[in-house]
Amino acid sequence: MRQATSVFLPTATYPMFPEKLAMKGMSLKQGKLCKAVTVLVVLHYDGSIAEYTVDNSIIKPTYMLTYESATELLYLNLEEEAELKILSQAVTLRLQWRRKQGCRLVMKCKFRWKKLIQGMMFFLSRRLLKGYKDKSFHRS
Image 1: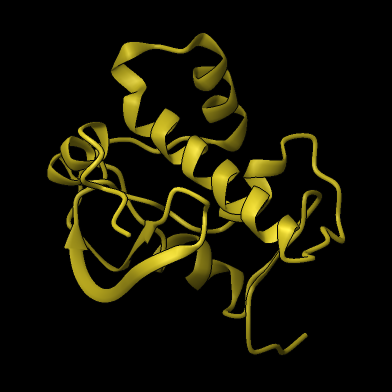
Image 2: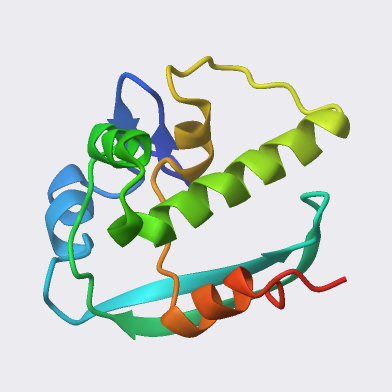
């Protein structure tokens, strides 16, 4: 099957590149410097997008999580996982805004926030998190 985009379903993933390349050669590796595309989205309080940037970057992932592990960590509400909680809250806020605009989810997932970040990796810098905590993260 040839396609122009990867498709991420709750039950399967169909990468646009050959599986070996997509899952190994192009995957982010824990503890290694990796080329990536970093997307920064700043949300208004209502969930609409205030601003965004897309940049090429080099990152070093500290650890990888499955969606099930992320859900469990959110449930445990650990102080050490503040970034994950902030990301979950941002995704929930954005989903609420999209629904108010008439968005309908075609597929139902056990954890709906998971659908929005399926196939994407988010990396939040400490500076960004500090700004979020003191409310300067949300710009009007």
